[in-house]
Each structure stands twice: as structure tokens, then as C-alpha cells.
Picture 1 (tube, rainbow, N blue to C red):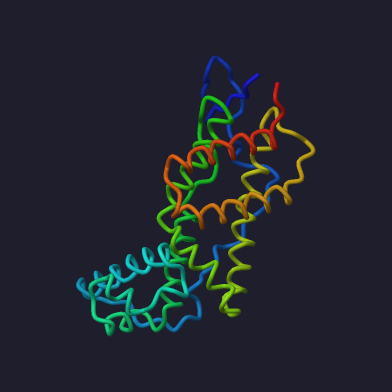
Picture 2: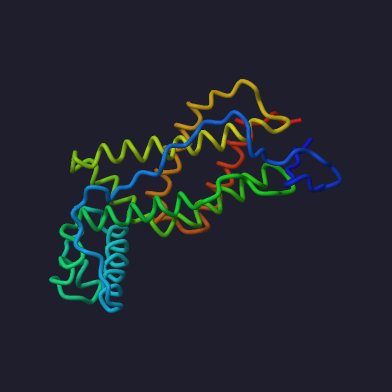
Amino acid sequence: MTHKVVQSGVVQSGVTEPGIPDSGVVQSVPPRPRLLDGENLPAAPRQARSREKRAQLLTAGLALFGERGYEATAVDAIAQRAGVAIGSFYQHFRTKKQLLLVLMDQLLERLEQLDLRPKGAATIRDGLRALLQSAFARDLAFGGAYRAWREAILLDPSLRPRQEQIERWTRARVTRVFETLLQLPGARRDVNVPVLARLMDRFFWDLLGEATHLATSELQPILESVTDLLYHALFIDR
């Protein structure tokens, strides 16, 4: 039997079942880490031309971090790629680390906006697949930032507490998704949610770090395999 997913009591495929629950005993999620708290960033630009230069620097840094990594990306290379004078870089960021922190904070903001509840779909498996594809479609643009972040936290011990905050937050969000799914009919009752959430959270971040080097044709089979893995981990085949 293939489990059905419905939304708001809508009948699909001739079967009426509860949709994704909006309430229940699920883990609360801590607030999103604010990576820029305590950072002495230069004042935000007010003029449109200055805002455009800042955006160009962020775009250039993101691309170079994806191509070269953190340590091999120099500030002058970022300025050159952005098409601005190196002095413009220091008008917006005091260090390369600050630029990376802004990019990572933007990534976390996008993750916060992502609705992790599977939407109405013909089957639970389809819902999981759509959820994974939606999440990665949103995150892939920041793959270069996370590649650089992984390197930076090894080089700079001051970043590690922020990494721990990120891990606690994203793991809590993954845990909440799994706990919500386990309220559906057909869910397994013996799932070690904390362990599964830790493994999947680590896997998703590692995949994001490598995704800049993966073609779409390579990424899609990975997401299909993860969909199958999660489905069998959470639900009983009938």
C-alpha cells in the first residue's frame, strides 16, 4: 500500500486521511542564529550605487568561495571580480570573514523562510521528494558560502561557537519535521529521531558543500535516494 498525503482534509486518489498535522507533541525550534550580532560591520550603505557595489562584492565573494574555497580567495580577487576598487571592499566589510558571515547569515535567513512541512501530495514519498527538492533549490545558490564556511571554522576557532549554534538550530528543525511526519498513519513507532535527525542534518550540510561541483543530473539521483531512505526509515511499507 502507498500511503496518501492530503492537505486540509482534501480527498486525493479516492482516499481521505489526515493531512500533515499542524499541532502535536513536536520539539520546539530555537530562534535562528544571528551571525552578525556583535560584528562591527561598516554602516549599511544608503545610496543606490553603494548598495549595488555591496551586492556585487557579495556575489563575487560567493562565486570565488565556491571556486577556490576560503583561504585561497583574496580580498583583492573579490574586488576585481566585482569590478570595484579594493577600497570599496573595505567600505562595506572590514575583513573577508565579515563578508562570509553576511553570506552565511543570508543563507540562514533563507532557511528560516523555508516551510519544512510537506505539502499536499499524492503520496508521502512524493511529499518528501518535493520538500527535498524545494529545500535544495533554495540553498544551492549559497553552496559556495558553505564550502568556505567549512574551511573557515577549521582555520578560525572564534567561528566554532557560531557553527554550534547553526547545528543546534538546523538539527532542531529537522527533528521537528520528522516528529511531525511520525504522527501520520503508517509511521514507524521505533524511530530514534535524535540520531536520524543528526545524521540527516549532517548529510544535508555536506551535500550543500559539495553541490557546487555537482551537475543537476548528478544531484537528482542523490535526492531520489535520500527520499527513499527517509521514507523507509520513517514509514512501514505495506
